[in-house]
Length: 262
Image (tube, rainbow, N blue to C red; front, side):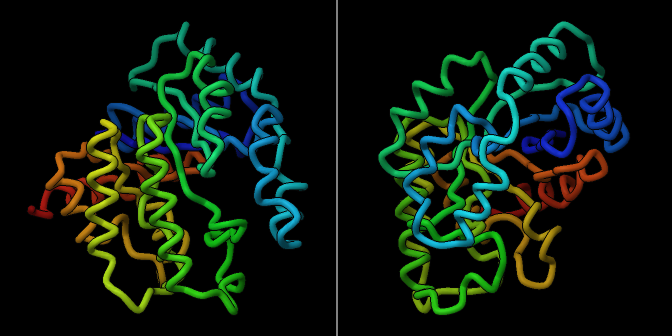
C-alpha cells in the first residue's frame, strides 16, 4: 500500500525526524511513502505568492507567519542523506506546489532542477481567498463563483504540464458549502485534463480526518468515477503532518477506489 502525501514540516529536517515517519509506515503496513513539503515554506517560492498578497488581512498575516520560514537546502540535504540509506519502506520525495494561473514557468524554473521524485500541484487559494483555512472566511462569499473558479483553476493546473499529480482534488467542499448547480461537467473536464496530462490524482482523506463533521472522504464519487473512466491513476494519501498520521485512512481510501465502478 502507498501513502502518497506526507509532510515533514512539523520538525527539523533530520534523519531522526524522518525515521519516525518510516517506523509508523512499517507499523501501518505501507510499502511506499511519498514525503513532500509545501512550496510556501521556502524562500525560493515566495515571489509566486505576490498574486494573493494585499487582498485581505488574513492571507497577508498567514504568509508573514508561514512563508519562507524553512530552508530548501536543508530539505534537499535530507533527501540526499535518505537516499544513501536503506529502509524497509520505499521513500520518494517531492514538493506540493500551490497552483496560480500564470506562474507555470516560474514553477518550472524553480522546482524542476531540484532532483526530486515528483511535484504535485494543489489549489489552496481562489483569487486570494484562502478557502480551506477556516469556515469563517466563507462569510459573504459567492459559493457558486468560488466553485466555478476552483475547478477552472484545477483544470488549468492539469493542463499546465508542470505537475506529476494533483493533490486532494475536490477539497473545496471541506467545510460543507455546496454550489447550487451540478458539478458533473466540471468533474468530467477535470478528469479529462488530468488524463491527457498523464498525471495521477489523490484519493486523500486528510480533510475528512481534520473536519469529520463537514468534509467528505476524498473525492466526490462522481469525480472519482470520472477519473477512473478516463484512465487516471489514483493514489491513496493520508495528508499526514505528524508521524502518528502516516497511513491514516489508507485502507478506507483503497476500499473506496476499488469499489467505485465506472
